[in-house]
Image (cartoon, rainbow, N blue to C red; front, top):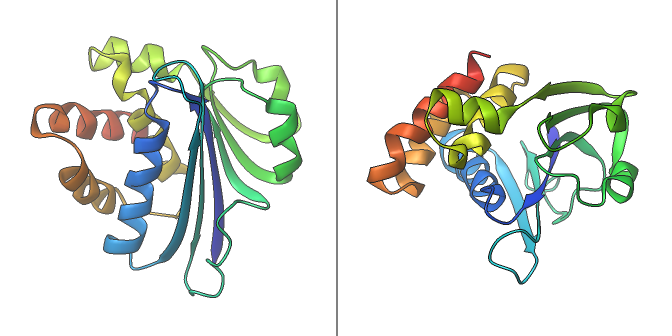
Length: 176
């Protein structure tokens, strides 16, 4: 098994944290191999952020540090969509925050579109956990990870004053 996960968003949306949670959960708690790379603009907020994660059951399959063909693509913001579409196939599961990303960009793909930022604000009280709502939806739609793996990773990575909101956000997305 090999999964290529591409995450695109803007600084301040938690793209890098989302990648790190997936990376830790897959390697430490699900016992997979993973390669993860992050790239981001120099701005603290607002610039493009990208995470590539290659998850596999063998170290040989996790040798690439960039996604060559995405099994899952998450777009939290519409940076360079046309460029990233070259990494998608007709079988790619595309998850978008439709508050920012137009669903018409992905008519020909398996698409999950919700206003994740709005849902996070309405149900958790902050948009800062929209990334975790998306993660919960990813968990529900794929067999990459189990909810328990992600909760364990969150306990390691999230400060205690934000942990409860992040766990609730993952559960919210899982139950969408």
